[in-house]
Length: 315
Image 1 (tube, rainbow, N blue to C red):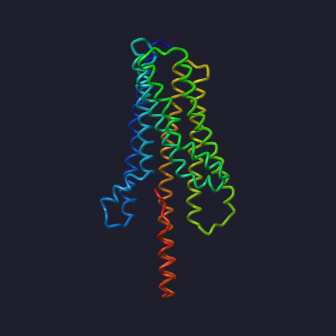
Image 2 (tube, rainbow, N blue to C red):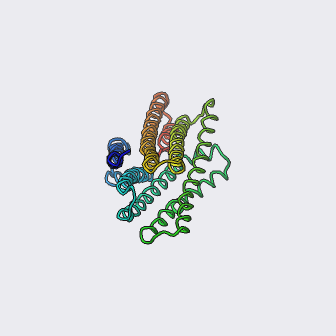
Image 3 (cartoon, one colour):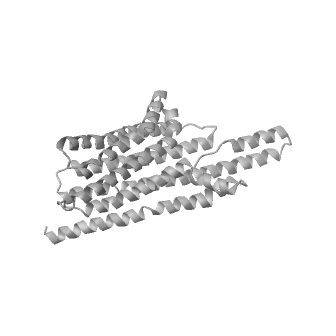
């Protein structure tokens, strides 16, 4: 392959990464649209201003926003990294800075993914596995900010000094630690989701909409875990396989495309949960009207009203 062709390939890869970075922002507009059009009107309260703010900054919406912005940042920094390749003395510093920024973006993405997955899936884990498994998962989730951001902070070192071998070795160990923890976390989640679906597929639950909610969480959770597994495999192949620099960069870069797919899956999960919540509210209202049409018992009406409003799914 001649030098001109190689240069063209690098430029095409850089342009693709930058375009993907811009496209990766679009789910944020969908999220805002969904909040404004569906979530805010559903509150039915007179305190509109406080309600709007409350709906915009729920833990789920905040974490989803973090994941979307981090995904976009990963592709933007990847474009900056690719622009420095093949490395030489004049591009080394730019590469170190871009690589450090990408490590922080990756840490934010992994942290957001773990927090979101645990907030959605903790109920399934508690129902499907032994109590100690839930406590173990909760401990990992609480310590995740340290697990994911420590390697990113450590990656600042090469920006300011020439990295000795010992520092480089420590960096590789620290970078491998989050991947191992996330792999363990996802494995437990996958086992819990699959076990829950298998145990409930033949059961008829009295809390029908709660069961549907957990099934939605489990099915989408399985999809996200499998997607992350594929990204890990692709990344490892890119790093370990005997490839030239361009091929290695291409394979590692391809693994990042799993992240926009994860964002789409999480948004689909959010919409499915919203639809399930609306169906539950409609069903409860129909049952309420049916009973109140047959009886004038005030105590029964109050009981049904309390039942119809006590359960709220956080979106």
